[in-house]
Length: 565
Image 1: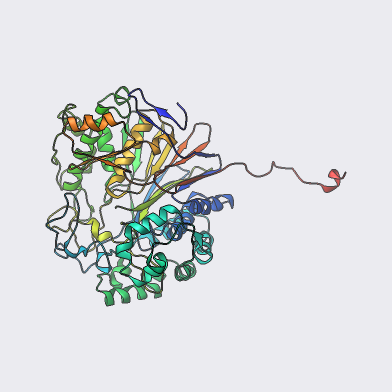
Image 2 (image 1 turned 135 degrees about the vertical axis):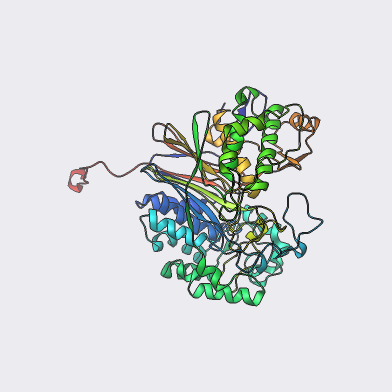
């Protein structure tokens, strides 16, 4: 087995397309090289992993604008050098003017989607939820960082004002969203010059956004939540028919939450709790798989893929029934994570045929396009954080004069009343974010996560199985072919052998071949000798940057007179 050609006993072969990076003093893995470089700059200057993560996020709002922005929301999972795990919930909230009947469900919507009449929850000001990203990032920096907001924002402002080269990936994303973006003059001027998607290689300058970032740098997050920038934002909302008001912004607060902890074959899996559903259902699915010899099945075998699909369907059934904002819904976390409950579900899995699964939990018992980064320093601090504006380019317009792209998080809520994730005023969205840190004997072994909406936690789940059961390297685990289903169609990446597709159809799965499931995964492997190995996959512009070397040996001085020829 090599880093470029992986073969399993089941006969599955795939090639990795990227190389990992190593370092002993720090590692930054993001989905854009300039963002990784911004984080590495903080580490090289003596900052910690939190400084690096926040610098990278601000930079991502410039160079990966289709995925993340200060008007988005997300989850930060921070492990400090003292071993404590801290979760900062900066998720977006439904505006106070919204409720269960704000949107009318589209009767022709595809199964599993949240489409509404007129796409009012997907595009434009009516699709925007109250943002949490800016407050969450600034809070993380203030609590756990060592640098100032001025320091960490400098790379982002530099790239916005000086410009950066558009990647083919950004060009493709603009192309995918162009029909909606063309309806807004402000966003069109930036990304659709002359009416066409901005070409790869073009130098993109976003001057208005650079000025917005400078305002944030001078005044901090209050400029949005209680200050002048917030006034511009809410005035625009009022004129455009959106729901966010000054009260929504001034009432917004982040929440510090207790991390969830589960176990799988001697490893401890740690991640954020609801309203993020990812780690909860990852632990549930791992509990189900723990009763099988996954290693003996082999990666990519029909039994392996079938079992992944059945576990996913079980998790999605329970998620839809009972996982939501715990301030509004009593999520049965204990039952979902219970190994006896997993054994009960496992006992009804038939390895020969696909089944339909319904929820066996209920309240009261016991996003599509996103970004993720994974950062560690040489002092023992680790950040795994997923942040988003939800869909590609969020609500697909720019707040005039600011360069800011709002989220379209209202699309994540169920537009039908009476559901766990129905719209309710002030309710936090339920996401699939899964910024996970894995321990062995109390020490970090892996940290990972990725973007991809409903496909996030299934992808992290599969990566963990790849690492623990199949013995893959971290580069192999993040690039390995993936599958996904929530009970309707089984998506299988083209990297699997043709025999797998036929076998799944034979067991009753409605199969669809897809180019990719979810987005670019960012992961770090912490080796016992102190080496950090960072990996990013082919599904995005992901780039790991490792920090090695170090300062001069103590007592060493350069004496010119000793070096005369």
